[in-house]
Amino acid sequence: MKFPGRRNTKHYFPVEDKQRSSFDDEINRPGNVFVAGIDQLLVDIEIPVDDQFLLDHQFKKGESFIIDDALADTIYWQYKNRGSISGEFPGGAVGNTLHNFSVLSDCPSVALGAINKNIEVGDYAFKYICNTSSKVNLTYLQPCLRPMGRALCFVSPDLERTFAISKGCMNDLSPEFIPVDIIEKSAALLVSAYTLRDEKSPIFQSTIRAMEIAKAANVPVVLSLGTSGLVEERKELILDFIPKYVSVVAMNEAEALSLTGINDPLLATEKLLDICDMVLLTVGAKGLYIGAITDKDQARLTKEPLHTKSLIDYNQYEYSRAMRRSECREPLKVYTHINPFLGGPQMIKNTNGAGDAALAAVLHDLSANLYHRLKVPNSPKHVASFLTYSSISQISKYANRVSFEVLSQNSPRLLKGLPEREDGLEEAYWAQ
Image (cartoon, rainbow, N blue to C red):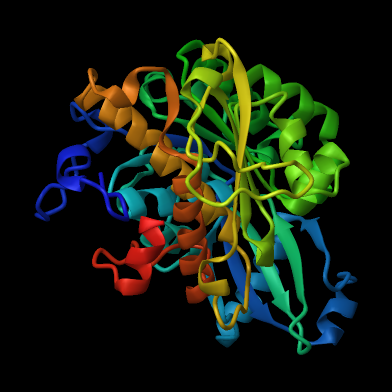
């Protein structure tokens, strides 16, 4: 398992010499650590159109809506045969996060969802697989006769993006296809609020079943909130599920406002820590916040200058590691904030995927904690039942750096991991 920065990687995170890839089921090898995630598998298809096209189909510019599969097929093949499709990309928040996790950690992950059974060379389902890390195990996907879910992204001449979603089989994952042993052995279970939108859909029931399995096996559940509109729509349901099942919640500032009604990200984080153990809150050009629960006996004072915003000296214990509230004798809320790495990329064409990238870094740290506990159970690192391997301060640097990499390459999926040989600037960044 790889890890960036100034760490004793040879001892804690050994990486085997690169050899030929094996078709063996890597997740069942002794000692392997992996994460699992449930996703509405989607392919993003970008199609340049004029305004007349949107008028003809009565599509509202700049909005996102559902269209039927037949209409999606007609539009797709119409532009495909003209050679007018500008790009087809693997999508889905959980899918992006699992891919990035495996690229960062060089460890396997398991995707759970539904995919078209009849995949042809060159079609979008084929391209989804080809553009997903080989470390992401797709063998547990449910095969379906309907096409994959598609997000047709119509790009107008003014560069406005209009999304037409064709569901296909993206909600067809049935509870019978949830592998109990995989979830029980995983370092974390990643779910998205998107799968909780429709209580009548099979994937909703599958998500509930997976979370119940994870809870019974003491596997941390990580929830990504999706969009602010979705959060507003399912607010009561989400607020019910978090204290019941979820350890870590990830969101942006708009989603945090929709969920808590609080416009201040630090205060929103404080409120959410009443019902979960850890919060990742991205705030765009202002960086990101991480809040967590730790035991007062395990709290570690920062060596950095103290900062006061809506909370006085909020970063006082940012060198602490996250714990589950249930494992703490005297729970204490701790916080950290970090500004964008190098001020952020000079040019950002698309912010899509930055939050998923940050979450992949958090998942890497959660899995690293399990990996080290299995390898060195008597280490001082495990004197208490910590949720993370690193302090929330160190995790914020890692998440921040991965987000920068995604924004720089204008793609929600990492093409490669972080540089293994840091230059002087990055070495100073990790050493802070």
